[in-house]
Length: 166
Image (cartoon, rainbow, N blue to C red):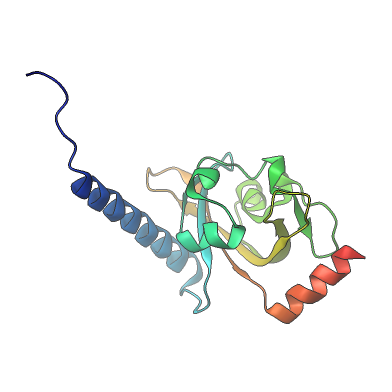
C-alpha cells in the first residue's frame, strides 16, 4: 500500500524543542557579546533583520508583549499594530523603535522606555518596557539587531499608566 509514511510526532516535537533551545541559546550568546553579561531580571530578547522583521525571539519576549509565536513571527517594527508610545504618551512610530534606530545608525540604542500596547482590544493596556538594542550578526551571517527588554518596576508602571490616562 503506497501513501505517506506515518509521522513520529514525539520525534518531531523533540526536534522542534531542540531547535527552539538552539535559537534561544543563540540569542543569549548575541546579547552576551553585545552587553558583556545578561541581566538577572526576566527579560525578552528579539533578533531582527535590517528591514526590522523579527527572525527570532525568546518565550519571555512574547509573554511580555502579550503575543503568541504566530503573532511574533515575521512582524516588523514598522507594523502599526504595535501602537507603541514613549514615556510622555506620544506615539512612537516604527522607525523610532530602538531596533530601527540601531539599524539606521549602526550603534547601540540603550535605556529607551516605551509602552507597547499588549491588548489589541479597545482597552489601553501597555507593557512598559526598558529597551536596549545592539547591532549583531544573525545566524545566517547577515547584519541585524538584537534587542533585549524587561518590564519596568510596578510602581513606575503605575505612574506611567496614570500619566497616559490623563
